[in-house]
Amino acid sequence: MFKYWFTIVYPGICLTTTVATKLSESETKLLEKITEEYGFLSKSVVVRNAVRLYLSLLSLKPKERLITLRLINEVISPSRRSSSELIAETHREEDET
Amino acid sequence: MRFYLEPSVLVKAFKLEENSDKIIDIINLFERKEGWYGFTSKWSLLEVARALRKDGKPEELISLNLDELRRHEIVFASVSDEMLEESKDIVTPYDVYASDALHVATFRFLERKERLDGFLCDDRHYHQLRKTVSVLKLNEIQLPQKFKRILTAK
Image 1: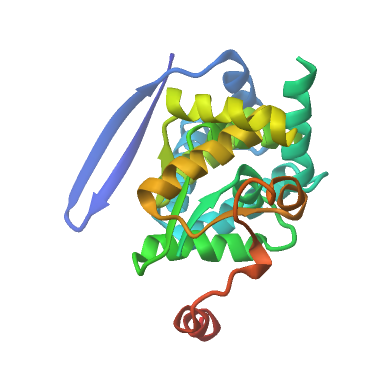
Image 2: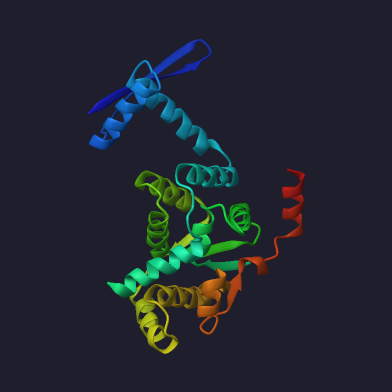
């Protein structure tokens, strides 16, 4: 299990929340690889940045969130086929099974 | 307007392709609660997940996309025995895939209860399903003028 901490600072107040989470083996390996490759001080810093990024995404207005997610989809894994072709293919799979 | 959203239209919201901006605008209209409503089947979530997997998206990203889809004001209807019975009566005579038959049956069920205006789908499904339900293509949908002005102003 991997534990991480993050701090929320309000004017004059400092709140620290400790959160524990379980990561799979592949997630742990990826986390270690990214920490090393990008020169982060620790895995906690990477996780904290990931949390901030995800919270920022969720804080967007619904339409902006959807547009941002569409962009993330294209950057991480560019589309190869149209949505129509993909659904037709999943239907063909059903028929073959 | 009250639409049934066929899965290929939902997948479009997560891909950069023709009319993907339009479906995002339509989903956004559902949030505004100004007479626009979206319905689909819970089964659509599985089809969207499988389609995104076929498109090479990693598991974590698919999960993120499905969570996002559920966050919007779309009603996900449960699959009932009644819908499955009606699907059986559609598959053979109309020669459509089982999933398409389930969507048509769900649409008909919701049409009776929720007074839907149409079954929103892509070109390919439009030709396959137009003999079974009143299908609409995305480019046939006119966004309200007020909404267009808001978009232009942004």
